[in-house]
Length: 399
Length: 171
Image (cartoon, rainbow over all chains, first blue to last red; front, side, top):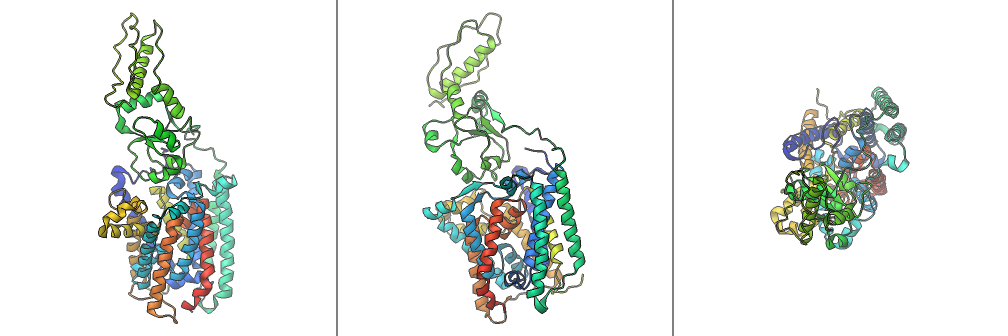
């Protein structure tokens, strides 16, 4: 994993307790700012939709743009891995469920005048309607969980899966260009919002002094510009590997025998192929079911080995979210079959000690994996080869 | 600081502050903010306390019990912080007080029914949308996730589509 400002394995293993304390602190900041922005008050929130005030737009869009240019600038200076963090923090896209769900959330927002986050702040400040909204959110989400037990609903929920798609991938431009454009759109939207408030707000118009506004606009535009400048910087090349790290069939076989507890082997081929024959101890996890394994959230103690049909050009996004080491089996299952499930051809006489050693390991692996005994290796050449280490002891794992 | 319940932060400065909270969450934790997920977990924990077998039988519910308790999760601890932060901010601003916020022409029962119904719709929708205004619009939007921007569009679309019908509740 990359060496950036902070490791984002903060929620696994021994760092978990500290990570959860940080969660409470960040949540405190979140709740405090929401309350001070006025988001604990239904009237301020619903005003956005009645066009009487545009606070929601200003705060939400302002927050999005600030975090976006901040992330882009940090990543421009090599302090932050934008894509890696985005892969762990954001959900992949299931387009249609998200469109329909988003529409329903928007309707719920107008009816309750809160969103799931702001209702918590309202509840915390004593507003009974906030408490009822929170109760509604609990009921609604558990009801959705119950509905997902219906196969047709679950099928819709899992449909139109696009993985992690970012705007800069869609547009084919560097992230800083997207962020710069969003800054300009935001400033234009803010100025439009001021106009709308002037028209619809009437006498209730909250006085909005222009000085802080100008300062915020100027800082956002400046940050956006800095982000654009960083495009010209040489990347702090993290030795950008051309493709994922790999493991050879031989190394995998040795590790499966010597230290199987350090590995988790995922077979991402089609279910039928995997059920028919697979690497010893591997899980059948066809690509479309990978997200159920929640690899981004599980402990990263074991190395993940991914087995495809042949070589994998790129990791599936769900696997890339794993916090630990990810290795791709060279030549995939085909390579494994050739190495571990096929007995080696007999060695010619006069093979070197190293060749004999490799042959023994391979014959042992094939024997253990297939249950077929091999012919004994040829006699070691004269010259005192070191006694071959016993690597592949196959105890009861044949088949 | 003097307590003035009608005084709020300048929305642009509040937006920047919220953005910095979000950014620090990315940088320190490699995670974003979210709200609806935490309440789903609270709901599953409640169901589990009443009928544990029922949760085990439904993978959509048992999916959040991987760490043992559904409550042992980043989002739940984040929500504990939100409650504390909201409480402290409301107390120090003089806005802390038991009341029902409603428009002049709606009964208390009517307002609470709307709050409950709207909340339920949001809980339902957020499950399919994989997040709410915090988890999708803020967190995903700032990291330029295409799905999050699609979510934002329909979220505001859904709101404005209904706004005309609910404005009587507030005016």
